[in-house]
Amino acid sequence: PPPTPKTVEQQPPPKPEPEPVIAKVESVKPVKPVVPTVPSFDGAAFFERARAVMQQRSTPIFAAHEKALEKNLESCERRVKREIRQLDKARRPQMEPLAETSFQQWRSNGNRIPKSLAVPSPKDDKAPKLPPNLGSGGKDEDKAFFKEVRDIHASYLAKQTKLEQKLEYDILQLSLIYVMGLKQQMDKLTAAHDVPAAEQIQAEIRATQDRPQYFNNLMRGIDLNAPPAPAPEVKPEEKK
Image 1 (cartoon, rainbow, N blue to C red):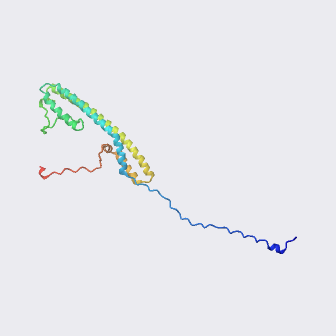
Image 2 (image 1 turned 60 degrees about the vertical axis):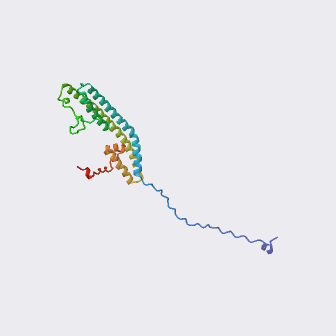
Image 3 (image 1 turned 30 degrees about the vertical axis):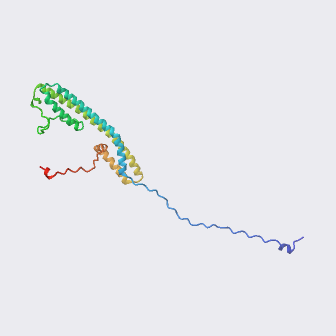
């Protein structure tokens, strides 16, 4: 049967569609990037560490060199005294103190044989004097003795020169290692755009390459750039 008007009125009305919910988006402030702080290059600390490493490597080189000089001088002294013992009894007592004083002076000078085999100056009252009859213009026996002493001196002086040359070579090899390490550090500083620090390294490289004595003294703990020690003050009563 067809619906009656009363039946239609009994049906519930349709529910309305819910409105979409839009979330509120707050504005986000831009975040500044965090830039890490680059520590400044401590040149003094770096050079102190680098030099300490090289000094540790140079210590046995210097020790071996000094020991070789000592042995060379001892051998020279034995040869000279052997020649003195071959002199007659009248001449021997005159030459023994001269030789003893000379070798004592050479030992106190770092066991180094002087280039000149000169007779002590007669102006020095404490120096032993060379008797006139023992000069090169004396007897044939005296001439032979002095010629032998001069030959001995020349031979051991040549050995000493070779020892000095070996030391220079060994220290040069160390300086090359030192410069190589400096260049590696300079490359790092250059890549970090730390120009002042790189210039410090470059200055040290130039000093090491251009002045061999600079590196030699650094290895011995001597600072060439240090100001000279002041002269001792002389009191008025000490002045002549």
